[in-house]
Length: 142
Image (cartoon, rainbow, N blue to C red; front, side, top):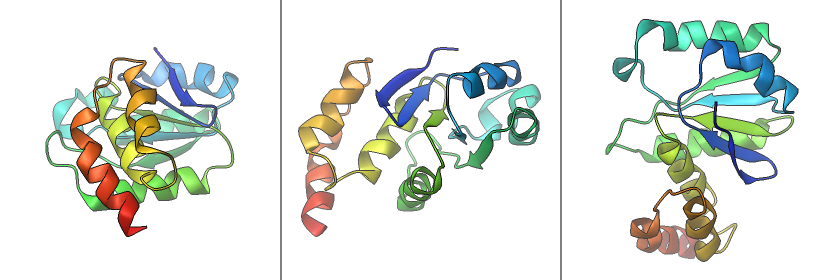
């Protein structure tokens, strides 16, 4: 498990295992967002198995599968809603943490400066510069 805290209340991670949830809970996270579609992972990591393990550890589990290259505004609004509804820090995961970073950045367009939305994930190797125009446009819409 490799938790990468983008902010004090939102972190991303590459794929986690069902055995990681107790450590995630111990680290102070209250909600886990699964940004990984079942079609790209083995059955042991599918949504139902991960949800059961997360809930057994006392975590709220949110499913928001983001298909690589096919991100939708529904993904963005679902991520924003899950973050907003969380009772504490959120950990989102996907294959590498990149998709979880992208939906976080898009969900915060206009709430944080675009430079921060790109720069914070960049500290962990996530290159979101290509989203600058979209982030700026979303921020301008309010």
